[in-house]
Image 1: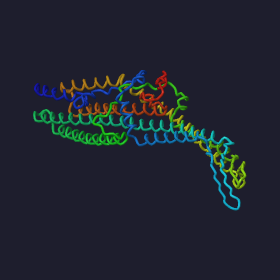
Image 2: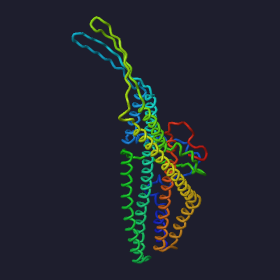
Image 3: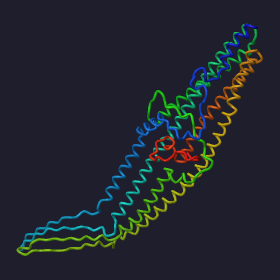
Image 4: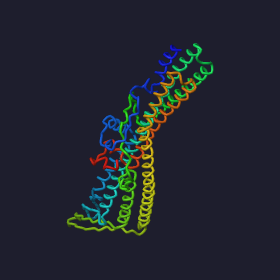
Length: 433
């Protein structure tokens, strides 16, 4: 019996280790803390990774091309609207006549300024759209990165569980041979081992899917993906409505509203007269000719009132779309904050009490198994509970990260949190990230 206890103690030394300690030493514990200063720390590898993703993203490149096109259009709109015209006339009859003339249409109604305003607002819309696309790609990439590392931890836990169950079944068989355990205990251990193998296969499939999803979103193939920071900013105490004013999605819609209103003025000006004046000089036989001309278009068949009404209705539609998006963004911001608060509170509770209780449970389990106070069934129940707790903690860690990313997205602060925003403003003002 003494030898059996020594043998069991050796086996249980393996069984008592945390599940991830065998295969992935660097992931022995999930390192995640909620720190008020976390937002101020830059993460160069993560920054470089997101910038590389943007450089490879067709959506970002397309939005950048749209910005350049809108800027070129704005530059063209600032040029004079009408070019001068040169006229040459020669007539040979009984009287030979030759003349040269110059005419210019005047921008009497200020169409050039209206075109410039519209084009400038469209350029602002394109720039805001680029920021919105960059944020969307960054959010999708970070979310995929969280899912990948969560799946990797799950796969490590499943693999460790399989190894532990293999060690356990070997120990049970040897104890059966020594007459200390029955056939039912061996069968129970075999079933537990088979279950662990199925769980391992599922986790490996999920890891492969998460890796493929990350590769698809980022457009990159990397042997080692950049790790997530070990600290997160805490959720703010309340929602600041001012965050919505700079939300890229709403900035895009607001620019569209302003551009639509500017098109109303443009449509009105296009219905006003732009006269054309000209001067010409020449000779008719031996006599000199000098003439002036004035051309005024008559808006008789088309007074362009329909275009004004169209622009007015489009402006109303754009404004209502903005109001609807604002309400939804406000609700999403509140919901994202609530989710972030709930997950961080749960994580803080786990760090404060759960981790310590979990480690204590493992130590007690090891001691009781070592002295023979636990049967095989009781040990399996306790070990499964311990592994389930580790799995739940890993899942919660991923949920905290996804909630944080969701909050940063809803608040329009992803680029500032990454340290990639154009503005040098402080990322964290004390309550807002």
